[in-house]
Length: 170
Length: 170
Image (cartoon, rainbow over all chains, first blue to last red; front, side, top):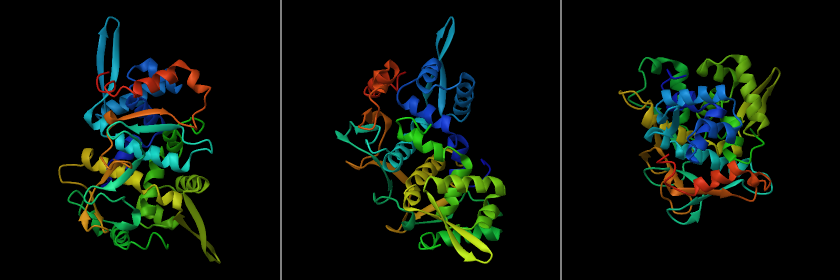
């Protein structure tokens, strides 16, 4: 889907895989060694090799040699990879709200910077308010191919997106 | 992965699929009809049927009959589904930052509520600051199975997560 002029489609090429997401989670927990991922995830070695290669090829993870004889590698998030923390935190917060069992949430996130237990909230970078679908509209940006805009189903999408009530009363 | 005591793993069972993510995107754009998804996504009808069934079974999408002879259905986000907007907005913002071509971002999001073009920012719901991996630690919550906590690789994960420098200098 990488060819589509849509940052969601481009990103889910990478993230639209359950194993990739939990490998990223382990990287944020500080795991860096191949055998460590295998132990904590119970993932098949071939599956792990494949997912780490994808992450490295997208520039999200860097492979570093930490021992030469025998050769051993560590897998570390790049800046691009560390910037995915917000996505995982947003996914985690939604799962806490909608997928928890009655006993409570499985993992508590503590925001050391402010000293409180916290959940992610997705906000507008202009005003700081929580982003909700009904408050947002979309229009083609400079990176949207003009030829595509001549197609009626593309135009109608942006017209619908500009009518905030549509999605609620379909 | 639904059995894992982790809201990310539980959620990526649903979201860890590229087609599911772009079907959700179309739902937020206001699409509600089967043939509409087929036209805008170029998705195979069997694939679309499968993904819509998954979304309905998770309570994210509701199927409503809007015509009876012949029967026609509309697909509409539930409250649980609409609450996914933040996740898609966070994915979109990351894609804008890291996957855009030189021409610019493909789609501009306008926050009608404040009147500015905007990008999603993932913030702490306690203090409002942007959430970064190095400022966060994790501990088992009430929903974490106590038997699992006796396993050394599980304990070491939470111990690592409490040492904010680890992930940066692995």
